[in-house]
Amino acid sequence: MDRRKFLASMTIAPVAAMAASRTQLLSTLAGLPGYSASMWTYLWDIVDEGYEQVFKNLTGNGLTSISLATAYHAGKFLEPHNPKRKVVFLEDGTVYFNPNQRLYGRLHPRINSLVSAGHGLERVQKFADRWGMKTRAWVVCCHNTPMGTHFPDITSEDAFGDRLYHNLCPSNPDVRKYLRALIADIASHRVETIELEALQFQGYAHGFHHEREGIELTPAVKMLLGFCFCPACLASAKSAQVDLVSLRQFTKTKLESYFADPTRGGAVLSSIDSLPSDLVAPFLEWRKSVVLSLLADLVSVAGHTKVRQLVNVDPLSRRMVSVDVAGSARTMGGVLALGYVRDGVSLREPLKALQSLVGDAEITLGLQLGLPESGGKKEFLDKMSVAKEIGIQSFNFYNYGFVPLENLKWIREAVAS
Image (cartoon, rainbow, N blue to C red; front, side):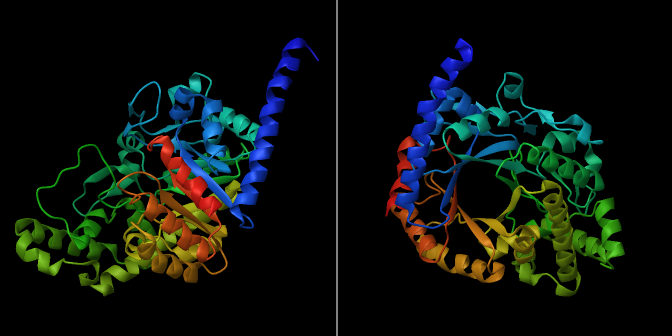
């Protein structure tokens, strides 16, 4: 062994021993067979703060995995403990690894500049291994503004023919081909899990720059505005004998009436249940089948890599984006459920209802650590207590860069209790 390799091995050995010790401690503290906890994390936080420091903070506070944003959208983020900058503007619609370009067709991933500087999924995995942690790839699927702007034909089209450039349509063959290639590519890196965000029909309100409306949007209006009538949807629905032509005309007429007089129209479009079931119900069931078939494709190309779709514990939210949570759980063996509620009381019943829908499939519960979203330390610990009480053993926490480091201690306290 040459001098450089010898010195490297001497550096890695203590870290590996420390990681093993932390892993053993976590297992003892958790008291839960199969306990796992992952932190949603951005690459720039790791680069700015330093790989060793980030993994020390994670393992020291009860985390067994890191969920790295591997394909992500735009944003302006406040970073409380970032030592180099407090406000971060993201490169929109980029991937944080070196893709195998031969896998892709018409649509290709944009590579984040940090990857060119030598960072990315591959390097994060090496450090995770050294610290005894598993690596999960957090992938945003159907939300990609640069791709939608460059290829408008792959985006959702509303009843008026307007394109929603930030929403890639899951019916579109090119979108489906791109996502299959992306997931196969990431799976080849042998990550433990691929977490799929925004694998759904996005709807109208899904985070675009400076969104503005001058009228109130009821849930029914939001849903109608998000219905997609692109050529791919029209063709697929027709083959499934779902009448999108009549639904489009209804949607356009109702929205125009609402826009003319929201006060009067609000009574008619007050809730989703106010929409005519003969037109809307078959459409929503068909959309579920589109998402579910795409999910099945992605699971198949992922091979032995575990796949988890992000879903909401709130059934209304799942209905808005056409996610069949029971079908998803059967397809993947589990779901990653976002429990973004204020306290344990508001979490208990939706989580129990979700359990009854997915049966024996694993539920990984996603919880927020930031304020005011988390409610605070007491509310967070209460949600963790409720989850463990009803048998949840797997957790994800949002988000390493967004919260003060002090908040990470909440996880350690919850694990130890």
